[in-house]
Length: 622
Image (cartoon, rainbow, N blue to C red):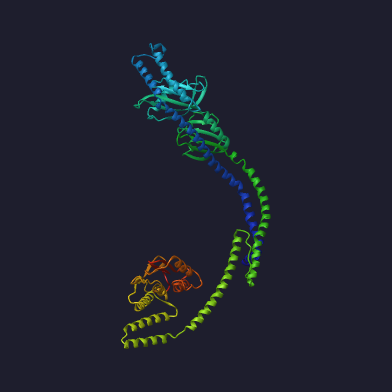
C-alpha cells in the first residue's frame, strides 16, 4: 500500500504542467536552503569569523613585521657605513694609537693627564668622528642615537633629542663582548631600559657592529639605537584593527614591546603564553581572568621576534548575534520575493516551450512549413534552433529520398535495357578463341582469353565484393590486354603487402583509375608509361597511391575534376577521367562512409597521383 501511495504521489507531480513543476522546484530549492542557512548561520559564522580573524591577523602581523624588519635592515645598513668612511676609520685608529701609547707610558685619561698637544689631537679626533656621526644619524628617521666607540671604550655619539645614555661604559662592555665573535655581522639587541642625561627612563632597541680596518682588525664599535616609538605606532594600528592586545618578544622570551607597556624588557620565557606559542606561526585559546581569549602569533624570519595578539572571544562574536537577527529577517523577505519571482520565471520559461509544443502538433499533422522564432540565446533558444534545423533536415531528406527513388528507377531501366546473358557472351568468346587458335592466331586467342577473364570477373558475384588479390589480378589482366593493343607501352608495378591478399574489398576500384590513366594520360613523347599501385598502411587507413608518369593535368582541369568528385550530380564528360573516378569515389563512400574515397594530385608533364583511402579493418577480412 505504501508503494502505491508513493507511486500516486509521484504520478500527481508527473501529471502537473511544466509551469507548476517549475514553481514547485523554485519553492523547494529556495525555501529549504534559506531556512537551513538561517538556522546554522550563528554557529557557522561564529566559527568562520574566528578562522578569518586568525588568517587576517597573521597577515597583519606579517605586514607589520615586514615594516619592522625593513627598519632594522636599514639600521644594519647604517651600521655598516663606517666601513666605507675612511675619515671615521682613520680617526679611530688615531684614537686607539693615542690611548695605546698612554697605556704603555702609564698615563691616565682625563684632562689633567694630557700632554702638550694632546688636547688638540683629541679634539681633532672627536670632531672628525662626531661630524660623520651626525650625518649618519640623519640618514634614517626614527634612529634616536648613534654611538661610535674606539677600542678603549671612548665614545662619540649623536642624539637627535640630546638624550644620551648614562651607562655608556657598561653598554660598551656588554656590546663589545657580544660582538667579539660576530665576525663583523650586525647584532640586534631587543628593547633595553636606560636612563639618559635628561634624567628620564627610555626604551630602545639597538643594532651593534664591529668596525674593522682594511686588514679586518677590530678598531672600534658602532651602535645604532632606535626608540620604540616607531614600533608603538604600528602596534597601535594593529590593536585597533584586531581589537586585541599585542606583545612582541625576542627568541629568548624577553619582551620587546607590549601594548600596555607593563612588561617591557621583562623575561616571560617561563610564562604559559610564551610556551604555548610554539613554531613560527599559529593560534591557540587560553583563559585570562576568567575570560576566554584567542591568541594568534607569527614570527619574523629575519629577527626571530615573535608577535602575539590576544583577542577576547567576546569581541569576536559581538556582531554575530546582530548578524543572526538580520539574517532571519532577510531570509523571510527573500523567501517572499523568491516565491513571487518563481511564479514569473516559471511562466516566462514555459511560454516558449508551449509554443514549441503547438508547432510540433502541426508537424505531427503533416505541416512541415512551420518555424520556431528564436529570440533568445539560452538552452530554449538552442532547442528552437535545433528544432528548425531538424525540420529543414526532414524536408531535405524527403527531397533526397524522392531524388534517390527517381535515380533507382532510372538505374533499373538502364539495367534492364543492357541485360545480356553472361554465359552466352562467355561461350561466344570461347568459340572465337578456338577459331583463332585453329587459324594459328595466337595473339588474338590470348587477347580473347584475357577479355573473357575480365568479363567473367566483372559479371560474377552480384554482391560486388572480392579479395584484394583477385582485384589486383584483375588489374594485371587489364594491363596485359592494353599491352596487346599497344605493345609494351604500359608497365605495371604493384607494391601491396601480402598480408592484405584476403582483405575484403568492393569490385572495380583500381581498374577504372588505371583505365583513365591509360587513355587520358598517355604521353606520345614517351616510349612507355609506368603505372604503379602502392599501399601505405597507417593506424586506421589503407592509402593506395595509383600513379602514372603521363602527361598530367593543368590546375584548372585538376580543380574541376576534384570539384566533380564532391558533387552529387554526375561529372561533365569533358573532364579527364571524371566519369570513371566519380563512379569509384561514390561507390567507396556509399560502402565505407563519407570519410573515405579518392583524391587526385597532378602536375603537367610529370604525371598523376590518385590516392584511394579505405578503412584498415574490415569485418570480412579473412
